[in-house]
Image (cartoon, rainbow, N blue to C red):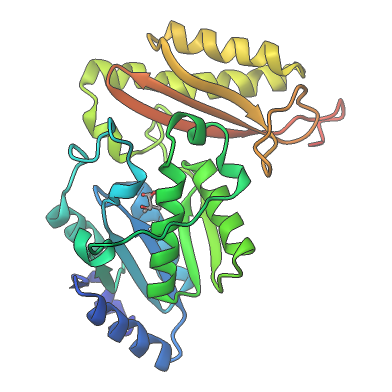
Length: 301
Ligand code: PAF
């Protein structure tokens, strides 16, 4: 893997497709004692991904980005075949943010004929996305563990936008003693609050406008808590109302959960994660926000 230098930061990354080339590059980086950062992606890169790569490049001496649309995390009726594949634009964007190496494998090299071993995801995967996308997290834990084993990185970077995914991966790393640190980085948003997502590309201008409803519902939850509302049912009702007002009627879930266990809470007496998953016509979007109740003196509880 090329050593980092001001020049490398602006140079196109080296792209490898073969497992053996990846393993060789990783071995070189490890021999040279470089701290290695891994940013797993499915491509269709946006500012959210690029913020992860920048963070990796700032914290690590070598950065590996993987681009692989992982078939096992998509359900049979989901958008695997439609998922945007924009390799050329992705590489161009990566050349500007300091990614030294890109691993872009074929499906066959990661899932060869006869592949049949999967990682059973932890308990935190059961609710929410787990309920609405059966097998999704099994596909995520399987591919992420494979990438962790291949990359042997010191740190892996994930976005907070996929909050449950980040919890699932952190738990898997802990449970299976995987020698890697998981770093979860803030969600990047459009000026109107919409969380960046590769799936935003599916939205036409009118749908894009309605998609803001997810952020509006989270903001409404935050405002309820700021006004002193502590009853989860009342806040969830408010979140649903805001989604409807924004023209979003197909809601997979709105939830107020313990940030670690993702179990629902009845009262917001502690920091709580608000989660939302909803459809704008054919496009499914998710988002989340931490709610921090304060006591009467204004201190966070
Ligand atoms: O968040 C994603 O893009 C994917 O779920 C991941 C982590 C790259 C695994 O395919």
